[in-house]
Image (cartoon, rainbow, N blue to C red; front, side, top):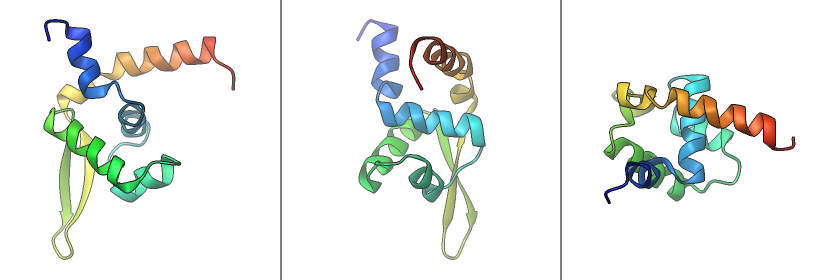
Amino acid sequence: MDCPVARTLDIIGERWSVLILRDLFLNGASRFQDFENSLSGISPNTLSARLKRLEESGVIERRFYEEHPPRAEYVLTAKGRELGPVMKALRAWGARHTRK
């Protein structure tokens, strides 16, 4: 794809991906269960796939904080934090142009 917008949407353009990013911006490091609790209606398989895609793209990273059993949390990378202005713009637009 030659278009940077299309390439960006290929990574973050799916609804659940954007909501995962929203949660990370609002709450910081989050565990799989945190996302399951926050994202009403997402299946575990879909959540796993979205987290994997964001991780493979370098937008988030998985950090292990316990060895036995292994437990992980997800955090934004520097690349992911650069999406902050985009997320703020989406929130501002939604606040102005959509109903509660």
